[in-house]
Every structure is written in C-alpha cells, then in structure tokens.
Length: 424
Image (cartoon, rainbow, N blue to C red):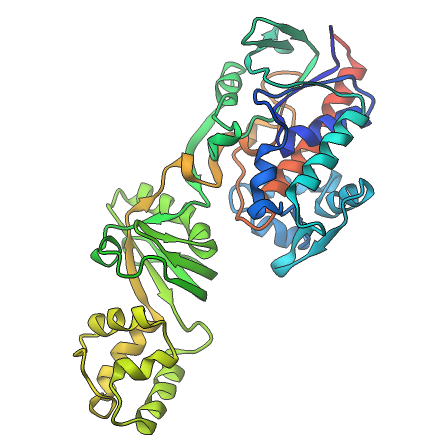
C-alpha cells in the first residue's frame, strides 16, 4: 500500500507530525519500533508530562541554548500557545506552574498520551507498532519510502524522521536515524549528553560526606579551567555519590561538556552560592551580628540556623577554621573566609554521566541543512526531520518537548502539502 506521508517514531514529534499531516489531508502511516506510542512522554515531568512552557517566544528560545534561534520560523507557524490550544481542544486542560511550565490538570502524563494517540487515529493515520525501520529509501535525490527490518517496503513521496536522539534509550531512542540522515548526505554534529548529572572526583564527593543532601534555591556558576565565567543557573540541586544532580546542575551540564572539550583539561570549576540573595558583605554583617548575640556558642552550632548541618564542617575546613572554634574567638578575617566559602563553594567537575543517562541529546542533524520553514532536508527531497534527532536542545522545563512538538507539527504539515502537490 502507498501512503502520502510515512512518519517514523511515535514520540511527541512523531505523534504531532502524524496528526498534522492527517489534518492537512495526507494518508499517513506511523511506524513505531516499540510496542507503545509516547513512551518518553509517559515518563516525562515525573510522570505528569510538562507539555510545554508558556513563556514569550524570545524567552522560550533563550531557554533553548542549542540552536534555539532556528525555531523562530517554526514558532511563526505553530508555537507553544498553539500547543496549549491544541491540547485543550482535545479535552486535555492545562495548568501553569512555576517558571511557565504547563502540566495537564489531571497531573497524569497518560492522559496526554491517550489524547494524542486518539487524535492520531481520528485523522485516519495507520499505525504499525513493533515495526523497526531498517532504511529510508532514496532514488534520484528524493525519498521513495522505507524498508522495515521484517522486509516490508512501504512507499511514500514524503518521510518524516522523528526517532529521537540517544538519550533515555529505554524509550526507544537509540540513534537509529543518524545513519539514514548521513545516507541522504547530512552532517551529524558531535553527539553529547545535556541535561545530565555532573561527576566529580573530589574527595568531598567520593567520600560521600554530602551524598543525598539537597540544596534549595542556590546559584551554580560554571567556569572554564582558566577561571572565565561561562554560565550561571539558579535552582535546586542535590549531592550524589558521583557528583551533582538536580535541576540547576542539569542545566550546567552542556557548558561543562563544552568547557572540558575546548580546553582538553581534566576538570573545570563549578561554584555554589548558598546565599544568592545576600552579597558577601551583607552575609558577613548578618553573621557578625549573630556572633555578638551568642558569644559562648561554637561556630558550628551557631551556623545550624543558616546551613544544613552536614555542610558546616565542610565550609569550616575549607575556611581553615578549627572545629571547636567558639563565636567569641571568631576573627573578622576568619568570618570573611567562612562567608566567602558559603558564597563560593567550589567543586571541580570532571565530566557528566554518559549520554544514555542524559535527559536530552546534544548534537544531531545539522540545522543549516534543514529548511526552518518546512523542516524538509536541503539534501533530499521529501525527507523531513523533527524533534531530538536535530541539533537542537534546551533546558528541562517544557522547552525540549515544545521544540519536538512544534517541529513535528510543521514537518507533518509541510510533508502533507508537498506529497499532495507532487504525489509519488
């Protein structure tokens, strides 16, 4: 059987491409190598699915540091607000939470997946599960169809590749699409993990002194090995047995990867500001006043009001203060050193967990080889790309799923229009 559009991959990008192509009149075949559609969506947002982020377009793109500007054309056709309307019209009301994140009112990712799959079926898409694709077929500079691993050949003048990257491989994202892209003449930029926990060989980490300790609303600053500030992120973090994790640490990961790659160094510094709303001088003043109120207490006991208990001996050791030092014996210079550590607790980061442990893949199909208004390949007529297979990556918080869904919508629409205008 021949189709107008074949979509490969049943994640957010592939599902949106299928819906969009069907809505624009195409006969669509959706091929998914696993036994379920929307597996990555089902586990996203802690099982609640952070569907999108409602920030204004410029701000949205600022939170997609990996080639986010490429999306201006996409968002002029279908953007985050269109996505909100799309879901609400399907009977999935959304609610706004902190930092513009949009979740289903049901707090259930499954409700999002069910509605999307129902819409895919409603527009007449044929779905084939457990159908891994072996190759995309090309002839004379244009797409002819796909060859599945079971030997089935499906013909279509337009193929949308929406198979994801290599992050979270248990959901089916194992990098299958890169070879198909290269065969069509595309460049694959170097793949690397983003939105991934950081690793450190420092004794502080390896001795597990702080393992499991969470810090709320701190600022992390990544420096290159020469000490130049690269990026700063505010949020929550957690110490692990291998390094640092939590939202703020994950956002720093791509900058750590780039710093280490560019410098060739074994590690790069990351500083934690435990009191981002106080300047160093303000913190010193606040703690000096406490010193006068509790002269007989030890520094360690006094600091419990301000800091997690496990962190106090770490700061004192780094500030070269005796463990049993009393407040009355704390000098101005010692206080300065202590406050400086609290504002700039530095940990040498030597890398990240591997790509397979990342939330998002950095790198992918080079965006200069893709038409941003249609998502069609500039190398092969009838070949479209959307979602994480592209060299586009954002922070967690609804940005990546927005990029995937919106590029999916535009790819599906464009593929349908092209296929119907010039059928096979």
